[in-house]
Image (cartoon, rainbow, N blue to C red; front, side):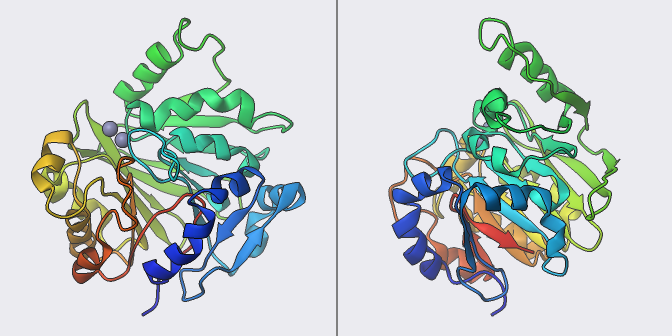
Length: 318
Ligand SMILES: [Zn+2]
Ligand SMILES: [Zn+2]
């Protein structure tokens, strides 16, 4: 089967890295890289030299496509194993949410424009914005635009960066993308301009998901949401190459998921099947779960086979 390597194999390898030592390795600039096309672990990228190369010449990898790199895969609060949500698509200069995993983003930033897309203003998705002064250290950065709904941007500016909480506002630019809106983002990168479509999700306080259409591939990002929003957003994410979808709970916890504004892993798989996604990456995993199989992957795979559970440090080629 083409696609993600079997989860147990990834876990077998990552378990030795990500479980404990992995965080340290990651901090030292090592990216665990694996291919979506059958390869297991392709590469270990080490050290500052490679970091800089990776940050400046992504698209010299032309023909190899784009990468989705998981910097934080957990929900609510960081755990020993997972920081909270943050993903980067280096070839497009795109960052998805800015949870605690954002502290790992510095190695990717360069002098070209970057775009951070926020799903909502819950702290596990925005707290990393305050790490700017650390991630920008020793680097000259291009403009960074923070995108979100009017409600989210207002909350970030007014509360996260209020004087008592964080007195030194980083030089972010802010831009609105309202639920239902479609925006074309110009880019000097070789990946070219791309379009972003936002759509409303169902979550306490509100949230919105995104679909990104690059030149010849697409990614959808759906977190945090209940299954109640599914009929409205599935049509927006039809046939994407990669669907990144939250799954806070294993199967059997659908009632609790609904009460807390989330879905179970099988509900996420049903979305992937319905929208005919090519691959599904499950994120926003419950940090309290110490289970080695927190989302009961075999039950998920029975609904949608090409699925994996995100781990911090994964790099998915698509
Ligand atoms: Zn969350
Ligand atoms: Zn939330």
